Image (cartoon, rainbow over all chains, first blue to last red; front, side, top):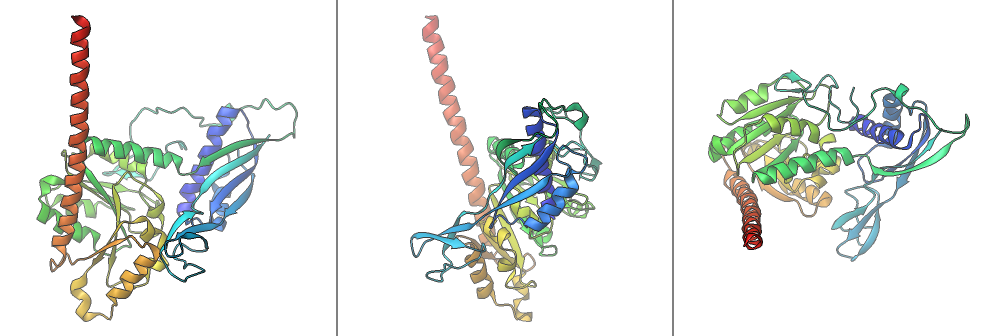
Length: 113
Length: 287
C-alpha cells in the first residue's frame, strides 16, 4: 500500500502549489504514472480520494496520464517498448534491457478555481 | 498532521518514542481555511502547470542523508527482503565477523524492538524505527534516526528495512546500495514476481544455502530470474548459519567501506589544500 504515501506526496505537491499560486480549490489533477513506475493506477485513485478528503483537492477529478515503458536493448542497440520491468525485447527475445522511460510519477497540471 | 514532512502522523516511533521535537524549517498551511482565492468569478477555473515529481520530497531528504553519511565516510546499505529471509541473523553474524565497533544498524519494523534488541546484544549501536501501519522506511524517518545513532567515522551503516518486497523499492533512504536478500526457502521466481525490488538492488544475497540439500530449490533458475529483471545485479550465495559465502560478503563490505573512506579522505585533502591556498592569499594581501 505504498500508494497511500505516494498519494500523500501528491497532496503535498498540490498544497505547496496552493500556497504559492493562491488558489483554494482544485477541481482536477493530471497525474503522470509511468507503466514501469511500480504504481498501480487504480490503487492510486482510491488512495487519492482518501487523502484529499478535507483538503483543497477534496472531490477533485484525478486524470491519470499513463506513459509507456521504454527500454534500451543492448543486443539490438535500440529503444524498444517494455510492458513490464522484467519484459523481454519484442525483437530479439532477450532480457538485456535497461529501462529508459516509463518510471515517472509526476503531478503535471492542476485545474483550480 | 503535518503533510509537508509527515511528522506527527501518530504511529511512527523511533526507539519507542512517538513523534519528534524539531523546528519546522519549512512553512506550510495546516488549515485550508487560511487559504483564499483571488479568482475573479465563482465557478471560473484556470490551469496551473506543476510538472513536479511526487517523490521529490523523499529524494531531497535522502540526498541530505547521503551528504551527511559521505561527510563521515560511512558506507550505508539498505537491506530489503520479504519477512523471514534471515536479515537479522545475517546482520548479527556480519557484526560478529566485522567487529561491533565498525557497524551501526537502523532497524525498521511495523512493531516491537525485538530486532534492535538482538543487534544491541552483539554490542553494535542500533536504533529501532517502528513504522506503525507504514509498509516501508522513508528518508525522513532515517534522517531522524541518524541524529540519534552513534556512528563512528568510516563505519558501516546497515539499514534493515521493513520486511516487504514491494514498497521499499520506491524510497531512496540515502544509501549507497540496496541489497536484496532472498532465502532458498522462498520461491525461485520471487525476482520476477517482485521485479521492482530486484531492479532497484545492486546486490542479491541468496541466503540459507546450507538448507539446499533438503530442498528442491533451483539456484541457477533464481539467479537467471534476477538477471532477467536486472542484468547488472551481483549475486553472493551465503549462509549465516554455516558461514558459507560470508568471506565474499565481508570482502564486498570491506571494499565498500574502504572506497567510502577514501572518497572522504580525498574531499578532506581537497578542502585542506583550498584552505592553505586561501591562507596564502590572505598573507599576500596583508603584506
